[in-house]
Image (cartoon, rainbow, N blue to C red):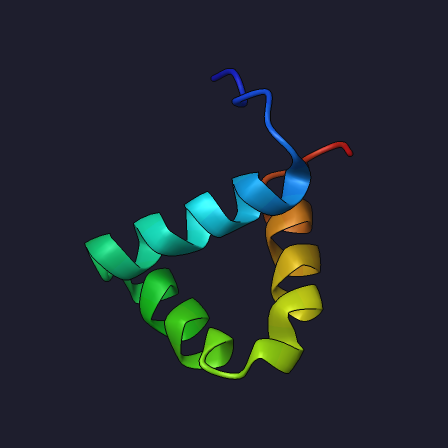
Length: 55
C-alpha cells in the first residue's frame, strides 16, 4: 500500500476530495469540518495520524 510521492498538503487535499466524492461515513465528517478553512490544520493532523503519514 504505497503512498504517492507528493507534497503532504497535496496528499491531504487529494484524500479529502476522495472522501467527499465517495461520501463515506468518515468522508461526511471530514466534509462537514472542512467547510471551515480554519480547520485545515486539524484535518491535516487527523489524516496524518490516521494513515500514519510521514512528512
